[in-house]
Every structure is written in C-alpha cells, then in structure tokens.
Length: 526
Ligand SMILES: Nc1nc2c(c(=O)[nH]1)N[C@H]1C(S)=C(S)[C@@H](COP(=O)(O)O)O[C@H]1N2
Ligand SMILES: [Mo]
Image (tube, rainbow, N blue to C red):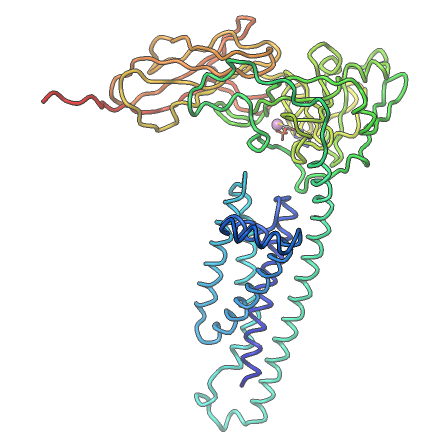
C-alpha cells in the first residue's frame, strides 16, 4: 500500500504546483508587479530581523532572492505533498491548508507597496486551481480506497478488483500528467509575458530623464487639511484607465512615433530624438470623462515632455485639417481637435510624470497630454502614431461607442472632508476638497450645509489654470444629521451647474454632496 500513499502525495504536489502556475501567469497577464510567490518572498525578507537578513544577503550575494524563492518552492512542495497525503483520510485537511496558504499569501500581497484588491485575483485563481485539481486527481484514487470488505466477495473476484485498481491508477496518472503538462505550458506563457515586461521595467527604472522634476509644487498649493486629496498625486495613486488587458511593454529603443496625414512632410521620431528636443514641464490635472460627480478618476501631476505644437509646426499642417487621430501601440485610438495640439495651452508628448520616466501603466515610454480635454480624446498612452486629418473622416475608439466626439472638460468640485457618513463634533466643522476647470481656472468655491447660505472657501495657490485647486472652510454646525454641497465658479465667471447629468456622452454635471452627522461633545454642566 506504500505505492498508493505515494500517489496521494503526487496528487497533492501536482495540484499545488498547478495552482502556483495559474496564479503566476494570472499575475503576469494582469501585469501585477510580481507573482504571489514573490510577494511571499518579499514578505519574508521584510519580516526577517535585520541582522539575519543582512547575513543572508551578504552570504548569498545578489542571488539571495532567487535562493529564497527556491527555498519557498521546496517548502511549499513538501506542504503540498503532505496535504495530498492527508486528503486520503480527511478531505477537509487540504481545504484548510489551502485556505491558510491563500490567506498568508493575500496578506503578503497586501503588504506590498501600492497593492490593491485587484492584486488578490491571482491568489484567488491559484486557490481555485488547488481545489479543482486536487478534486480531479483524487477522485480516481478515492475509488481505489473503497473498502473491499464492504463488497460482496463473490461479486468482486480478486482479478476484477485488480483490474479496477489498475484502471483507477491509469486514470490518475493520465490526469496527473495532463495537469502537470498544462501547468508547465501555463507557467511558460506567464514567463514569456513576464520577462518582456520585467526587462522594460528595469530599463525604465534605470532611466533618468535629465531636467525632469525641477518644478516644485507652488508654495501654498496645499492647505494642510488632513484628508483632502494631496495637491500632487503620487504616481502610485494616480488613477488608471485603459482598454488593454495586458499593457504594452515598449522598450524605448523600439519606440517610434509617426506624424503623418495632412502634413507637408512626415516625421518619424525615435525616443532619443524626442529626448534631444527642447522640453517643457507643467503641472496639469488629468481627469476621466467617466468620473462621476464626487469620483476619484482625476489626478494632478508634473508632466515633462515635448510640445506637440512644435512638432506639428515642423511637419507643416495642411489647410483643411481639424483633427489628429492618435493611435497607441495597443491599437486604441482617439481624435483630438487639431487646435488643442497646436495652440498655446502646452499640449505635449510626455516622457516623465512627477519627475520620473512615465510608469508603464501610464504610457511608457511616451504619452500625449492635453490640458483642458478629458483623457479619452487626448491623453493617448503608448502613443505611436499621430495622423493629421479631419473629424469628418474617421471615428475613434470611444466615439464609436457613443461618447462625444470632442471632450472638453467640465467644471467640477469635490468634497473630501468630511467623509460620507462621518461623525464629527458639532460646533465649528471643517470642510474641504478639490475643484478643477483646466484651461480656465477656478476663481471661487462655496459650500452650503442643509441648503443654507453658500459659504466662501479658502483656495490653495496654483501655478496655472490647468491644475485643480484645494479648497477648505469652516462653518457652525448644530448636532444632528446634515448634508453639505459644494460648487465652484471658474475664472470666466461660470458657476457650476446643479443640473445632474450622467457621464455618458461627454462628462457628468451636478454638485457633489456628502451626508454626515454632528454630535454634541460639550461636557454637560454638573
Ligand atoms: N492607449 C490608451 N491610452 C489611453 C486610454 C486607453 O484605453 N488606451 N484611455 C484614455 C482614458 S479614457 C483616460 S481617462 C486616460 C487615463 O490616463 P491614466 O491611466 O494615466 O490616468 O488615458 C487615456 N489614454
Ligand atoms: Mo477616461
């Protein structure tokens, strides 16, 4: 019966490794920075006491991470085999074991910098693979285990029993081989996806864009109120919107931009040629047309790049053109009014974001950025082609799907403080948030509690009309439940409308409002 015990262990091992393979490849497909096993390795490194870690790192040189991975793989392999073996007697042991492993891994993933709940998907996929494969592999084994004594000895002669046993064993081995083979293929696919990206990630990390990041946020841009979105959005916190499931990993040496169409002369640019040109740098707020009132698909960053107006002037735009059809490496398109790319607003081909080379998710190595337009008509990530043309002659990705052809931003303001449902002490209550109208600028922000008078808020300082502005103010609030609303007025005197419109087709309107309650905290007189 020793051989049979071995089969159970093998079942556990194959199921375990299959789960690692699917979770690894899921992480690569979702371009999560690293796979769950690496997250565990990093967690181990983080939790290892300093002197021990120092020793390990010095002892194994730079190979320590690989070694740690191999050690983790060996240990979990033993655990997997043990779980398979335990499944023979008690089906719930592997279930419990997988659950503990998944939870530990989930914790390790969440410990990583800038991870979100989506990063847990590979863990879930691995967990499901474990359960599925173990069930698949142990089913034939379980049939082998049926106690013979319970059966009628006459009905199950020894020869037939042995034949059934051989059959069950064969079924098991075939399944184990198929699953093992599939796991190798899946892991291999993940590796191909992963290495391309890792190489680009490494290139990007080592890249220094000379002169980028020299424009600090203006003094006074932050009002110093806790919980208002920070005036400068860090790259890791900047919202991401893209249709690509696997984002393009483009090495700068492979990048080319073609400017063509209704121009006197076509231009083809390499990354080096682009970097060799004179650069511009500006703080610009970028927002998504799908951002609902009060939503967070908006961020403010320092962008460094080359003015599109200069490139288009060099190409020589022909009369009659009114649009530029932009195409990204992944085939996404948008149509941008020609004027927005040639006027003085400072539209650029951006190479850096907050002083660093663009993060891959934000369009590395080059993206477009146009102040005053929603991202879906302007901010092409991984941009590779600019065709000067006419709106009448094409229709771009989102326009084909019912969104507006031109996408000028709309004036907006948001309440960050207090949070929805927050309980604050009654009396003087602090309110605050952000407001934006790129291209025009924000002149005033007011808030009103329970439909009462509009209270003017203080505004943070801004370097131009193209960024959001922080606002904050206080007013007396009595104990009880309340609702605060906010509205902005732009520098042209337009007051934000309270008419509510959906994001489709060209951006939401309406006023942000937050419900909160105020509690009497004054000490009653004795
Ligand atoms: N290649 C590509 N570029 C794209 C998109 C996309 O789906 N693919 N989405 C656009 C949209 S809708 C927005 S709002 C901005 C978001 O840019 P971000 O992800 O850097 O915040 O990118 C734009 N550029
Ligand atoms: Mo968007």
